[in-house]
Amino acid sequence: MRRWVPNLAYGLEITYDDWSEGQSPVFEVRHLAYDNWADHGVPNSPSTAYHLALLADRCNRMPHTPESGGEVDPAPPPILVHCSAGVGRTGTFIAMSSLLRSLGILPAAARPPWDTYTPEASAVTAEDNLPHDDQVVQEIDALREQRTLMVQMPEQMGFVYSVLVAALLGKFEGQRAGSA
Image 1 (spheres, rainbow, N blue to C red):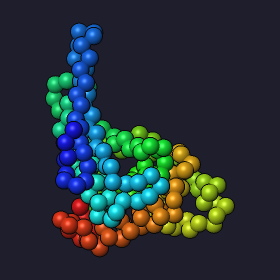
Image 2 (tube, rainbow, N blue to C red):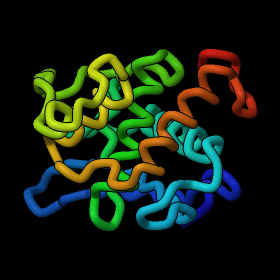
Image 3 (cartoon, helix red, strand yellow):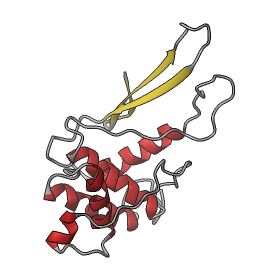
């Protein structure tokens, strides 16, 4: 394991070869471990979360070997995100990354999502009278349709707003205003 970006994330590349059937199906996993985000909390700064999302996107777009071997597959695979429980930090990172992408700050996904179904407002939004024109609320609500506790803490929701505002204002080192 090595640090891919100093003071940000550890990286591990794993290549799996299965020789059991005489063929060589190969797949690669690029695992990023960000260890500076406490459970039920938020990262120290919006900048570190933004750069982690940027790093995850860049690592995912690095050339990788297709399952059948041979030529490099031009489209990156989906990004999988998980924390210990798979809800608070996971939901915060997914919401933040998805919104950065939808605002054009992160590059568009190379492949469309597997499921383009857009759920209607959940009971959470309907019961709490949350604003329906707020993209952050809509994104978190859609995530909660899939897993109810996504973005557990109010501080995590506020953190998503902080990252988006800073990114839109071009506040991150090496970032051009409005883009990655």
